[in-house]
Length: 435
Image (cartoon, rainbow, N blue to C red; front, side, top):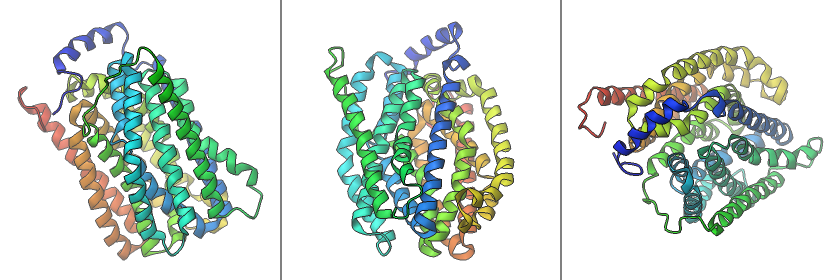
């Protein structure tokens, strides 16, 4: 596997000493701030979902969900893993964050034209009979401009352990959209076309903030002028992020085409409940990422030994979330509107999702941050392909229930693949470099 910032030996020698002085990842290092930030982000996203579901209605909301799901898939490819690489660079060498930020921000913009073209074409193929060209283009642009910029800002603060600013950065995009749509909550003229314009404005605003930060960082006299990166070094992270979006959103597009956009909208609402319940789990993972990158320089075994208790806690939290999902499913129509009655049964079918997701994200994070991001990316990519194939077959046979079964099966298969790799890695000779 490719080494990061030189050989592992130089990094290994410094890590234990720093760990003895002040254990990396202690509570004082920001978990409370991260979970508060992610809680607010989840609250803003949930509020936005409620407002849009009620204002747009069952069918138009389903169309919106499908378009932004496709846009989100391509937005995570921006910069080919630029945000993850910036976090890695800043975690290992905090003094070099300015050069890293400027370089990775530029890389994001270089990939935007091709991603925009692909996203619009794919979205048009799926929703061309339901959504016009202008709202489709505006929705795609809003996500492709706003999401990568927001993520780069968030990772930059995370790498420097500025968790308060990290929380603000992660909340910025959903909060802006809530503020734009909330004054219209009681109006009758909000349409998908009108919302697409507001979504576009919010994305442009966040992109402008990131561009201003890059200009400021580049103007600093201490910035490293000749910062460079391997164009494909972040491909594993990018593949992982894109494949994760496929797992989360492809099933909605499949349901929309094989069933209806209304059913896809209800399925999306049930999935949104899972996102909220996964909040403490995702917060724990995000809080651990910086330290995982540093421990990962010494290999997978070091990460496992250093964080075994944290992973046990994560699995317990996932089981609690499963029980909560089953119990809370009946409240979905009361929150989103009486037209979403089928979301109750969907929510109960998805009740195991917190556990399968937590297992996969935990394993993925441990292995990817230990220098095996390419392997994890390949597993995610294969898993995404299988998920789409299974989804098409099972949804055509069993409706939305087939999408649930395809998701569970894919998570289990990917987790077992990575577990097998970890076992082989831990039992291999020291000279062996790859899984």
